[in-house]
Length: 162
Image (tube, rainbow, N blue to C red; front, side, top):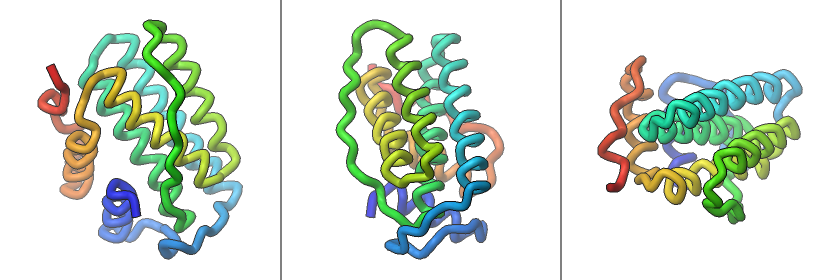
């Protein structure tokens, strides 16, 4: 099982949030898909606002939170993360990032674990290649904050590479 999905499942267990047994691969109800889509769009919007502000720490936090939301949907299905190679390369255009993020989020209206996995894989790729950050360390920090019911996003400055 993907290490980040394992952390999300731990969070869901700790706070008694709904999720299917791992390996069940259940379908989400239409209302679950709508709710997941709303959360993904909120997190995606936070990433776009951070990009507009040029705040690398906020971009990283937004990408981790977006990935966390995508993994939550995968946990609800009882599925595992599918490895998706990301074809986006840093071309110097912010619009290409916005386009690929929006497209991947939009595809999640399918409710498919494969599409949620594509969002997660894109977030890890952008964190590592676009903003040059330690996604694993940032994910663990945000997870720890969620587990301790910390309302404020932890400072992820030390997750950025020079």
